[in-house]
Image (cartoon, rainbow, N blue to C red; front, side, top):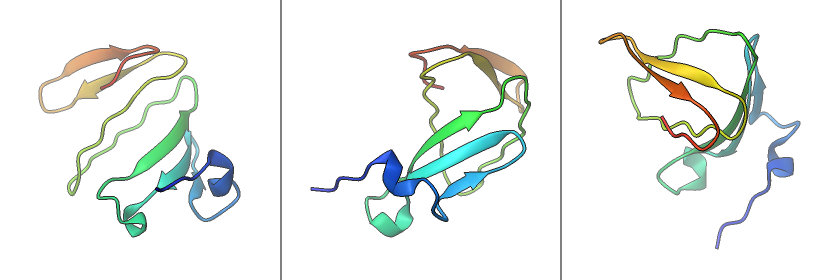
Length: 85
């Protein structure tokens, strides 16, 4: 059994902030599960350009709304509560 809470992450090196985001990295590679889990808040109105060369990422929208774009094709998808992209 592996149990962690968000509060275990807050205020640690795994609680990372930037100009447009706050990422609470609840599970990481060192936890040995083969995947990571991040609780990330995105600043309203911000645009981020992210590239993942070494992993795949799934995003699940809990609140708010936004959009994700596949740069290679220009295709976009809306993100609203209950949507994974």
